[in-house]
Length: 160
Image (cartoon, rainbow, N blue to C red; front, side):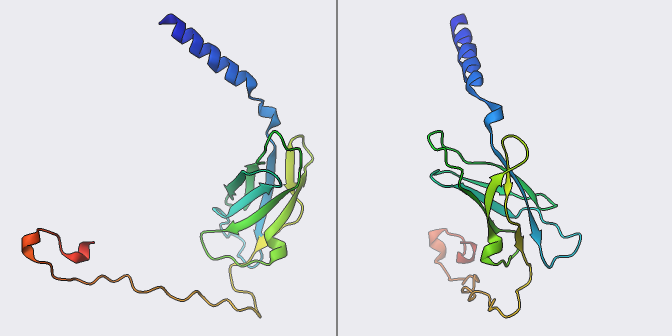
């Protein structure tokens, strides 16, 4: 029984020894709103980070000031540093131009630090000279109360 604890501790120590925390590559950036008020809450806006040749995708949410941090998705066999950050959406409808929705990721000033090369910006109101019609409404979710025979022992259909 004591061997089990020793072996577990040894395996745990070996796993921790293989983790190199300094090798994490962190992307830091900020999203901005073009037509928002000064104190607009920019939290929970989703930003994705995708690198060429890597299957994984990193998705993060912004803080109240619009800043975000994400670990670069990596594959130990790939050395390519062609990565993009993309503005995905937020808790409300966002409007953006294609050139403001995607940004190339470049090397930052600090070691293992990366940033976006162009600003990620959006608007909360529909831009002029564009067609921003809402999607067609989906059918009503109102239920119909069909009478069921009482002998079946089922609740009324409005509960389903």
